Image (cartoon, rainbow, N blue to C red; front, side, top):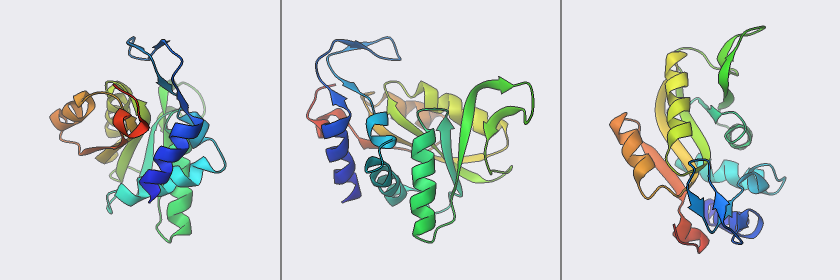
Length: 181
């Protein structure tokens, strides 16, 4: 139910089919998914949190990923989880190391050895999530899972995570949204 609600919200609020668009990967596409239209929405965020929580490894104690795309997802998952009685925190990974205050790339209530899941809103190659997994591992976190809300990589992201021995799952693929890769 949560996954279908996620698909419906994304389709009605975040999907744009009047391209062409240039993607983060540099590829061109006739459609674009601005997942933040769902992840930042008051009605969308709880749907996102529930859909991710439904597939989250029971061992996971914190969720996060590259800042901006993963931030609202991580917070939604943490809030929904805690409302359901599961203690999960959110964290964020900066694109670069901060040189003042609390330095480093990983920000949030996490500690070395903690089992975490890496989140991403939309992936074309898996590159941002892989970078996040590398930064999390370098900070001493134990990455046990990676989850993308929408995967338009045609299996490339799954292969890349498989090479790193990190279980990977995509909640939505283009076909679910009624569009072609």
